Length: 363
Image (cartoon, rainbow, N blue to C red; front, side, top):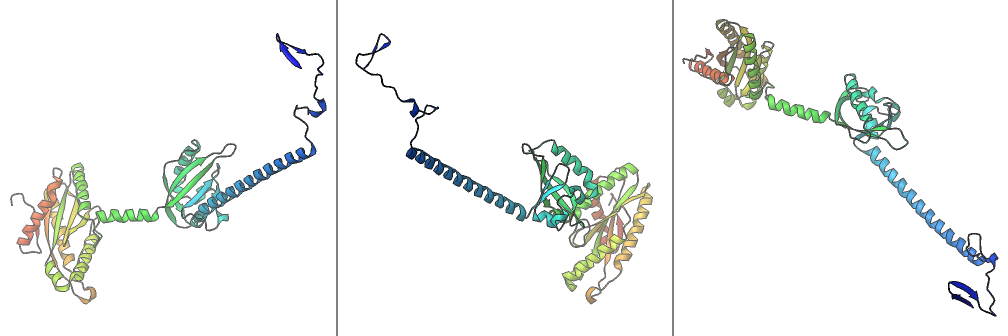
C-alpha cells in the first residue's frame, strides 16, 4: 500500500509494486489496440472519409451548377458582354456581343477590340481604358463611342467597364455594351419636335427666337442691318373651310418648301403657328435705307412665289400673302422685334392684303 507522508512516498511492508507491461503502450503513449478495436477504428475513419467525399462531390456539383448558371446567364443575356486581356484582345464574348460585332465567335475571340471601333474614337478609347488598368476593381465612368456592326454600319454604344485582377492572374477588362442607337434616335426626335414644326419641318417659334437673338448679336458686331419679315397667308381660313384641313395642310407644306428653297444661306424661315411664317434676313446693308430696299425686294419675290397655284390631288390651291417688316440694327431690342413686325403685318392687312408694310414707330 502506497502512503504519502511528509511529501515522501513509502511502500508498506508486504506490498508488491504493480508495474504495467511496457509492451501494451505505443511509442506515442497510447495503448495498443487489438484486432477488433483496430477494425472498428478503420471503419470509423472510412465512414468519415466517405462523408467528406460526399460533401466534396456535393460541393463540386453545386460549383458546376453555379458555373453552368453563370455561363448561361453570360451567353444568353440580351446585353453584349466582352472581356479583354491586358493587350486589348477579346478573350470572352457572349452570344449577343458575337452577333452584334462579328456574327461568328471565331471572328471575335483573339481580335483586338480596337478593330471594331470607329477610327475617330480609337485614341479617346485608349486614354479611357489605360486609366482603368491603373485602378483594378474600380468601375470606370460610362463611355460612349461608335462601333462597327458586323464590320459594316456604325452604331452608337454605351460601355460600362471594370478592371478585375485575381491574385496570381493577369488583369482583365470586363465590358457591358449597350446599343444606344434607338435611344439617341428618340432623343434626336424629341429635340427635333422641341425646335421644329411637325407639319412643315421648319423651325418653330422657340428656335426662331434663338436664331433672332443670334442675328441681333451678329448685327451688333458687324454694324449691318437685318430684318424680320412676318408673313400671313391671305384667305387661308376660307380655303381651309372650303377644301378641308388636308388641303390646307398641303398648302402649308408647299408654301414652307417654297420659302425654304428661296432662302439665302444664313437666313432663317420658321412657322410659328397656323398660317403664320416669319423670316430673319441678316447682313443686309450698313445703312437703314439700303437694308429697307433689300427687304422690299425680298418681300416682292416672296409674294410672287407664294401666289403660284398648285393642284394636289386635283384641287387647285392658290393664295396671296401679307408681309410686315421690322428692320433691326445694332441697337435693336430682341423682345420687341417680332411684336413690331406683327404690327406692321396688321397695317399690310388693313391696306388691302397682298401688301408689304414696314414698321414705323410713329404709327
